[in-house]
Image (cartoon, rainbow, N blue to C red; front, side):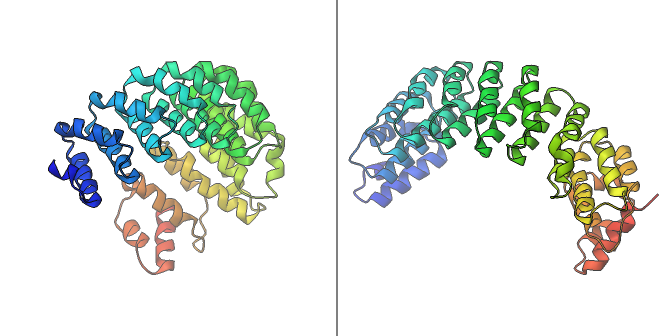
Length: 351
């Protein structure tokens, strides 16, 4: 404790760091004094705010709130204080943080949103909805993300409006994702428009498809993707439409993917994309369904798709349940490339 008053700044910093690691509540008052001292080094004050968060005692909330709201403070200190307030989880500070959504510094506004998301209180919804119109895109993105985490249906109209008007694809992706997390059926029409719209980036259309699968069903989402005007056009471009089907999952998606895989006239890059999309769509299937899907594929021992799929299923613990012998695992990690591929192909071609 006496090192907190050392004339050596490095010694003070190390002492604060150790106190934070130990979570020593006896140091709270001393740490609060350091945090309030504007003559102290910024690095030390930032570490002090972190240490108070590690201790996690409600005694520090008032000091942290004052620090976060002080516009004359260094931005890094304010951001650290906001992060700690979000982690402490005291819902009583929501009203204290909400005014920071209008702070002059965009990073502080974004930090306030992150704190409100951590607090997870419904009283923050109205302020977060207004933040969807912030002039800075990172702030808008964070607001959409927070609203998705909160899952409050009051945000649906604002998110739909943002999805319709916004053209920054990162933000529209966040908006579509948030609508899926909220799961309100009122979002269906807007998500279908996003799915069908060629003006939006593919990532947003993919997020819209996944959101529809959360709100309704994988089957309905698959049908919406297949009916979208860009779907057929994407075949000549690349693998994104196939990847979307894999992420949606469900029997309809699997059936479509197998149709692509089994078509001898299909382009090689789409054939490969459909096989790899099974990494997403098969992860939730039962062992028997998984075997049926994989046995329907004619594997080429010169390709690497069997190996990639097998390694994926080993990681998620599926292949361990299917394997009848050790040659699969040994073959996967064999340094000789051809032996590894052949081991995977032999495994997936078992009757």
